[in-house]
Length: 246
Image 1: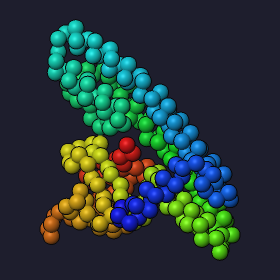
Image 2: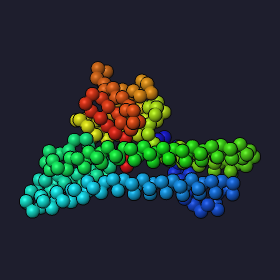
Image 3: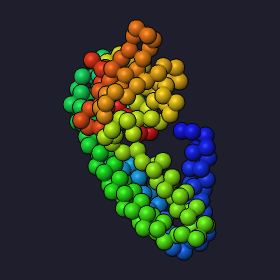
Image 4: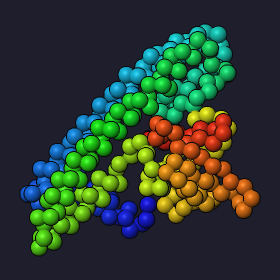
């Protein structure tokens, strides 16, 4: 994000964090509803993810006990790494060969369920943001001659737009500023698409279509990635990265 835009967004967030009375009376109740509902959705998302993760975490706890009784330090290390990946929402497609195979079914169920949950709450958040932006637009048309109100509306719009992290539909408008973690195959653990047109701060990238992006290593080497239908994955051959929401 450009430093100037970042500073404006930070200022907008601080503005909204301040008591509602400091906002114009026309804007304060609208902002309060949006921020309160956003927090509620975030809490609901976290609760649902925790519910989905519990069966696998319980299975890991049982596997931990068995490995402890067997004195298997290698398995215990893998279980701890797996537990951390679950809690951070960073499970990869492949399960470590050191983990007990009986964990596989419940693990697959979790990997399948989490993206659906994210998509469901992303849809709700986008609907909330869209409705709020429409209300801001209507209020903006009435703010002529009221510089203070116009400035607050502009700050609110920036705050909302900067906070949207839903499923990507068009790489041309949505890719810059996102991070993707490796999910399947061997490749970079993370791909960060900067606002400066570079990946991980080193290599140039070009968006060739709504769902196509090319990472250019040098003049004779590049990797083409395709956006998945889920709007949250990028694939290149046998490699897949998923949108990092953490």
